[in-house]
Amino acid sequence: MAQIYVKQAIAGVVVGTLLFTAISCRVSVTNEEFFGRTVPPERNILRYVNGAEPESLDPAISSGQQEARIYMALYEGLVEYDPKSLDAIPAIAERWDVNNDSSEFVFHLRTNARWSNGEPINAHDFVYSIRRSLTPEVESRSAGLAYPIRYAEAFNAGAVFVRNPAGNQFLLKKDFAGDEPAAEALGQKSLGTNEREYESTAAESTADRDTPFHQFMHSPDRLVLPGAEKARNKLLESSPNS
Image (cartoon, rainbow, N blue to C red; front, side, top):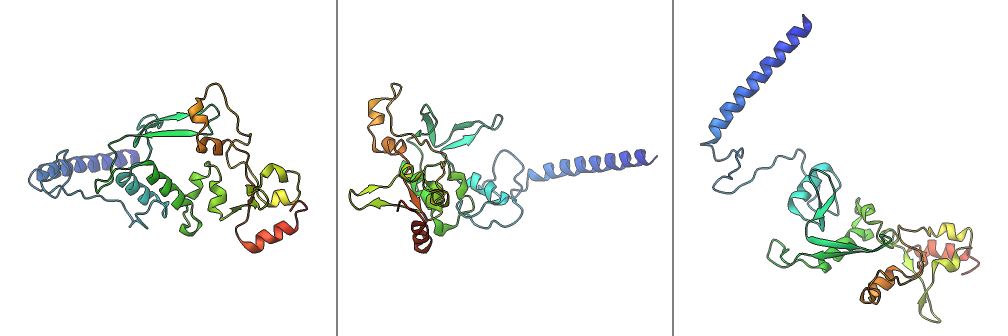
């Protein structure tokens, strides 16, 4: 009998809900403040219920769900998720090229992408946004999402490259590979990049290989040291190769 009562109670709630919905729909015809139709109100005002107040409207700051919903409504990235398969689909990038070992992505932006003030969006805007999010002073909780980019984690940690004063060349990770425990303390890990020296392949065009960016992407990994002077000096003192 208890099960019957539960079912009857649920049925009553369902009927009441349907009735209330029907009444609400009838009221919405004359109530311009109700956004329950596919045609927006004349004043073109959207009321969006999102739960808690967002911490910030800056995508580099917040990482909560309520903020993420607003970010998705306000901003558009290089790619979007397919609503069914969740595969990457074009957004501001109309297409992209990937090299053989997936270490290099080239995004081709659509020419009609613009900011809300009408100014065109270009590649420099994306470089600025990613670099700003990785800047240590911003303290972005989502910075780790960009760590697959070469040296992004080191940059986010405030680390520095080291030049050899003699030839003004950057010191390389491979030159300190056998330096233990200093190599381990330096945190010299792959950062998700290709460690081989720059090589050309028949599948890649000569023009692409000759760009400074491509050569940088496929050059040997540079030595990375802590940005803090005290930590850097302590590490160098323990390294016989320094």
